[in-house]
Each structure stands twice: as C-alpha cells, then as structure tokens.
Amino acid sequence: MRSRRGGALTRLLAVLCFCWTAFGATPAEFAPVRIGLTREASAGPLYVAVAAGYFQAEGLQPQLRFFDSDATVSAAAAAGKVDFGAASLTAAFYRYAPTHGIKVLASQVSDQTGFPMYALLIRKRARDAGLRGVNDLPHKRIGMTTPGSGAHYSLASVATRFKIDPGDMKLVWLEAPARELSALSRGEVDAALLPYAAALRSAREGDALLRLSDFATSQQGVVFTTASNIQANRSSVEKFVRAYQRGTAEYHLNFLQYDDGGDFIPGPRYAEYLAFIARTARVSPDLLAMTKTYCDRLANLDAADIDRQVKFWQREGGLDEGTAAADLLDLSFLDGR
Image 1 (cartoon, rainbow, N blue to C red):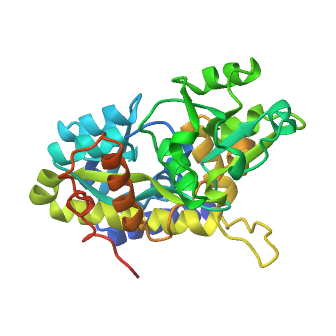
Image 2: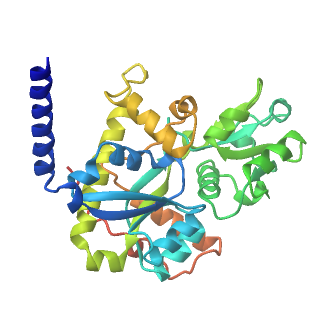
C-alpha cells in the first residue's frame, strides 16, 4: 500500500513539474498583474480566466482588486494603482478616458438578445392601464438611477429604433434601484429600469418585464489599460489579453451554448465556474444561472456601437465634440482566431 501511494505521489509531482515547465514559469517567477473592477457577475469571463489558470499559463499572477465604483476603477488605472481595469461604458467614462490616457482593449460584457442586462419592470396596475410594450412608452414616467449610464443609452437606442422621441419619455432620476422600486410601489413612476437580476427578484404576479436587449443590443462593459502601460510593457499586455481571451472562450463554452431547440447546454466545467463566479461576485448561484451575461467568444468589441455611444453623448451635451471613438480603442492585441 505504501509503495503504491509513494508511486502515485511521485507521478503527481512529475506532472506538476511538467506543468510548471510547460507554462514557462515557476511560482516564484510569476509577474503580478493588478486588475481593478467592481464586484459584478458581468466580469464572469475574467473570473473564469483566473479560475482556469490562464494567467499563470502566461507567467502572470492575477491580483483582483475590487473598487466601489467604475469611476474609481478608471482613476486607479490612470494613477498606476492597477495595471488593467474593467468598467461599464458611461458618459463619465468617455469624458475621463481621453484625458487620462485610457485605451480600451477588449469586451467585458454586452447587452445581447437572450442575455439581458437591463429590463423595464412594469407593475400590473400600469400594465392594465395600457403600458404593455415599447410603443406605449411615450409620456410614461420611467424611474432610472442617474443620467449618463449605460442603461440610459440603451433605453434611448430602443426609442430610436421605434421612432420614439426620447423627449416624450418622462425620465425620473432616483439614484439607486431601491429608490426606483419604492417609487414604483407608490405609483410615482409607471416603470422602473433595473438591472435584469434586480427586476427578476422584484417582479410579482401580473407584472411585466421588457428586456431592452430584445429590441436593441449594445456594448456595455470593457477591459482597458493605459497608453503608458502599453508603451512600457507591451509584452505583458499581450500576455494579459491572450489569457483573457482564453477566459472568454472558456466562458462561452460553459455558459452560452444552446441547442437548436433553445435548451441550455452546460459546458464541462459549468458547475465549477458557476460556483466560483457566484462566490467572487457574491451573488446566488441560482440567480446567476438565470441572469448569465454575454461576452464575445474572442472578447471582440462592438466598435460600431461604441462610435454610436460617443455620438449620442455628444448630442446630449455630456461629451466634448472632439472625442472620437477610434482614439479610445487599441484593438491590436486581440487574436481573431
């Protein structure tokens, strides 16, 4: 028995030594890479890349550093406190990025049909009164958090598609989803625009959910670094993006596969990754399973939509007219295989 155990241990050690050699680094030789983000489940592909060891395979040791807001993530990247960041696309991001040398590298998350990020929650009372679809939105009171958000842009995109004048919708700014729900319960708004998970949790019998991505899709979150980091550490940026792309492909395989009948096909490590993402993002695994977000398999960005976003915020007066979407992007690291 001891002989067999000793032989098994020897084989295990040999495999581990082979793996470190194949990865091209020993544990002491890993270069730390600091990644700033908020604690959101939409960073699922990044979490998968960490859990699968893809950064270590590139000789990098990922250090996830969580911040309270996307704005503080961007500020940390600009100050050199993190090497890479992941954040939502907002009017504030577009204002900050060009003046602080931030360069967008890859997709983090996009709002896609079948994988909604936002939904309009309509209580039964408003539904019975006639608010049943997008064409009923004019002159309705819609609760939202703050102007300039990705959800704000998405709602405007839906309105544009259906030839609704955004000025005909009465947007009520309430700062937080909890305040939106309170206003909805009191009848002070007709609908509340919420993160999809929050809308699902809060929906009651007879309520309606309008998922924005059923009507218009959009790029919502990105991965970025600074121009100075690219210039000084291009090889490390290449390694980071390669590892991240392996994570997005693995996420796609395990979370985003469906058969011809529309039934979900969990990947081989789905349960393991689901538990890891839920634990890291501090969400319920059951809720996470119902609210999976989308990222392109190769982390490609919807550059055309980013251009539309820049122009939208310029029309809204929240962005300098000289800002160009192309100047914010560096797509040279993406491997399109």
